Length: 465
Image 1: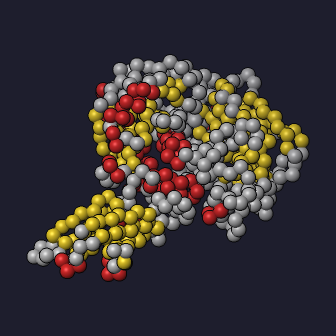
Image 2 (image 1 turned 180 degrees about the vertical axis):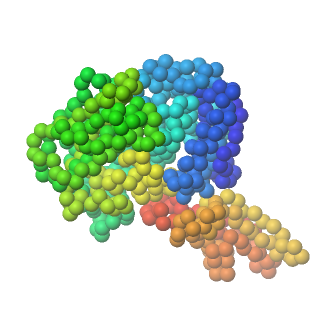
C-alpha cells in the first residue's frame, strides 16, 4: 500500500485524518484512483461542505492494486482489495465483504487515519455509512453520497429525509418542548419553535424496473386541507426526456431529466403551488418506447403537502421545526425545510445545527494549539514563547471565509493577567520577571458555534519557568 497526501493542513498528530482506500482499481488504474480521490477530497475540503473546518483536516489516498477492475453486483464481490459489491443491481447500498482488511489498512496508518473511506471504482450512485464510509467514483453522486455518510460518522447525526428509521442527534427532536435542541439557532424568538404544517400522504421505495407494458402506479389519499404539494422521486437509467412521462391524476407534471445525468441515479422535485382536492389520487410513471427496460428504474416516490405561507415557512435559511415522517409514519422534527445535506443529498451544505455539531465533534479530537515553542532573542537575555495555533480566524489562508471568527488569547503569570500580551501569540520573558507559573488560555470564537456546553472551543496550557 502506498500513501499519497492530497490536502494536508498540519501534522497528523493534531489533525483529523481522512484516507481514501481504493477498491477495484488495478495497477494500471492507479492514476485514475488518485484523480478520483483528489476530486472527492477537493469537493469536501475546499468547496463547501467541510470548507470552514478545513484547517482541522488532512486528506490522504492509499493505493493497493486490485486483481479485477470495478465492484461486484448481485451480491457477488469481484477479486478486489476490499471486496465492494452491490446487493442487487439497484443503485443503492454498497457493502464490503472484507471489513477486517479495511480495518487493518486504516490501523496500519496510525494517527493519519481517523475516518477511512472505501472508494469503489464504479461510475454510478451508491454507498454506505458505518465504520467505513463507502462511496463510488460517480462524478455526479460520489461526493454527494460521501458527505452525507460522513455526516453520520463524524457528527453522529441521524437522517432528515422521510421514510427512514434513524432520527437522532443535534438535527432531530421528538417533540417541541423545552429545552429545545436548536433553540439558539431559531429564526424566531423564544425557546421553542412552532410546528411547520406539512403532511406526507405517500412515501415508497419501489426499487422497481419500469417496463413498456404497464406504468408503475401509486395511489394515496389527500385530506384536501393543504395549500400546495410536492412530487418527489428518484430514478436511474433514464437519460432523456422522452424516456419517461410522470403523471398525477393523468396530468403530465413535466418531468425533465438532469442534463448530465446519463444513466446515473438522481433525485427530482416537482413543486406544485395548487392544493390537492380531498380524496384519492394517483401518481404514475410511464416508460417511453425508446427507453431501455433493462436499466430504467424507479427508486423512490413521495408526496408532500404543505400549509399556506403563514403555516409553513419554506424560505431558504429559516430555522424552525419541520416535520419528518419515518418509515412507520412517526413524526420527528428537523431544523430546516430543505437546506441540509442530511435531508437532501443534492444539497452541498449542512444546516447550522449540524455544522455546529461538526465543529464540536472535530474539536474533541484536536487541540487549538499546535505547538508552544521557545527561542532566545538574538543579542538579548530575553526568551520568547511563541504559540503555533491551528490556522483559524486571521490565521486562515482565506481570512474572509468566516467573518467574526477570532482567537481570544490571554496570558497569565501566577494567575494574574498580563495585559500587554492580550491576544498575542507570543510572550517576551525577561530575566527580571523571575521564575513562576505562566498560563495561556486560548478561546476560539466562530459564528458557526453558538453553544458549547463541554468547552471544546477553549484550551489552556500551563508553563513553569
